[in-house]
Image 1 (spheres, one colour):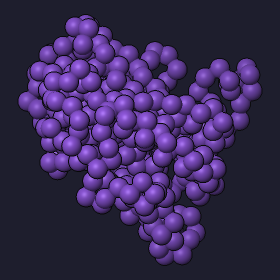
Image 2 (image 1 turned 45 degrees about the vertical axis):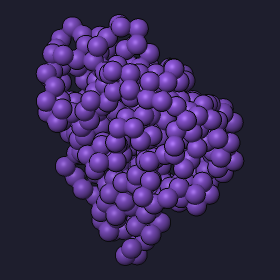
Image 3 (image 1 turned 90 degrees about the vertical axis):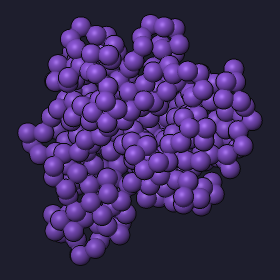
Length: 336
């Protein structure tokens, strides 16, 4: 049991009052990818662990996907759109360099014009960082109700010549709407750690000042590159001690967690959590088989699944956790 009362000073008040999600319409099966990649039947599913994932077509809009997730969250929570006074876009890949993505999303969403908006980018763990930022702002009284949305069109950056990453990536969006609440729910701990030794193991070079027409650029700079084996080895060498620090800060133990919502990075990463960290099957939220790796949208989509499947229960601690380009480890222990 968590060694804190519901109103402990350890708790940073935060209440998730609704969540929503959106997927593009194209369901891409691994059997279809077998044909596309010239592989034998069953090859892609066996290698990736994904049965199907969703991809946007060439006309798909990251902005519209985000707006759909916001609309879904408002509808599910019966929340008036004009009651939201801050929008945070928490994603790894922007819509464009300028203006920032949240402004684009606000224009497409049902939220009212004139509210505050900004972006948070911590790659695949952007949603966790945004929740931490939102909690701080809510507890200063600066805002009353905040919508956090993550949306990715990972398929736009797939390098089909790179098998390891091309068969796992999926598109999607998810949103959480949060308030300060009554102080009985909130953040028990949040820990973000970055290890630049892994900075070149997962990246897209283009999109900033480093690679552009004046500094020099190549078509492949726009595509996703990952050295999965080296990335996994580095993350695996750090994750156990990281978990210990995250749980110690929350004043709880692994056995206290009712639900763990991980980044759906890969089949290997999820199996590592089950076996090495001894996470029970009924505690781990695993939607990877039918979504793949949705980059920053992965954690909030899995959280939305947990909420809608009664695995996000008041008084029962929930951990959000993931690894991201950087290499960054990000986690949060919540008391719903």
